[in-house]
Every structure is written in C-alpha cells, then in structure tokens.
Image 1 (cartoon, rainbow, N blue to C red):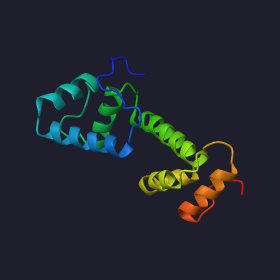
Image 2 (cartoon, helix red, strand yellow; image 1 turned 30 degrees about the vertical axis):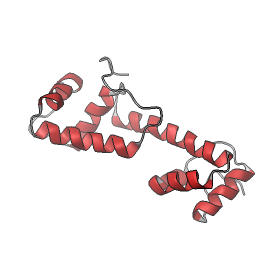
Image 3 (tube, helix red, strand yellow; image 1 turned 135 degrees about the horizontal axis):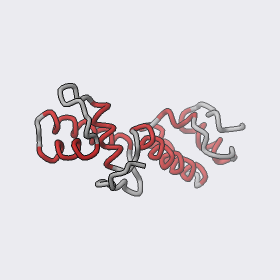
Length: 137
C-alpha cells in the first residue's frame, strides 16, 4: 500500500468504468492546472512528468489516492468485487443481473468465479450462449 493516507474511498460496489472516468477527469483537471487536480498529483506522484503527464500517470495518482500502489492493483481489487457480484448473481439465479454485468464487462465471462454449479451453467448459457472457462457443463 501507498505510504500516503488514502484521500479517496472505494464505494461498496466499485465500478471500473467510473474509475476510468475519474482518471480522465483528473488528467483533464491537471492539464487545465486546476488546483485540486494539481494538489492530488503532487501528493500522490511527486515525481510526475509535468510536461508529459498522461492517462497512465493519472491512473497511478488515482490508484494511490485510493490507497493502492498501482492502477493494476486497484483494477484487480475492483475486478474481484465485480467477480464476486457476478458469482452471487449466478448462484441466486439472477439472469438479468448476470446479463447486465456481462454486458458492461464481457471479459468476466472467462474469469474463474469459484466452483461450477448447475445454476452458474444455466444462467451463463442463457446470458451469452457460451460456456465460460469456469463452467464444467
């Protein structure tokens, strides 16, 4: 974890798309030299390349502001929560919830979510017609 105390806190149900928007907003704010964005960059990435500050730099700042060492670690945490939500929806037979998650994050269909279950196989095959890697059907 980052040595600075996190200034931001992930919601209970974090959304990767929202975090990507936040990174783009931080980048735009920094480019416009908005005081809040500049202060956040200075605090969480003191050696930031000021003249070539790019989206990956904004993602790093954002990750550190949330208490993570890197964007991939923040993304992994959010993916873990999302996979957990997907698994819960599958186990509860929530085809609509599964469909919504997979429409937003189609790459999750091939992520391991735990042991294959009959509900998981039925629900997933209804959602996209494919058998994901984690389904033993």
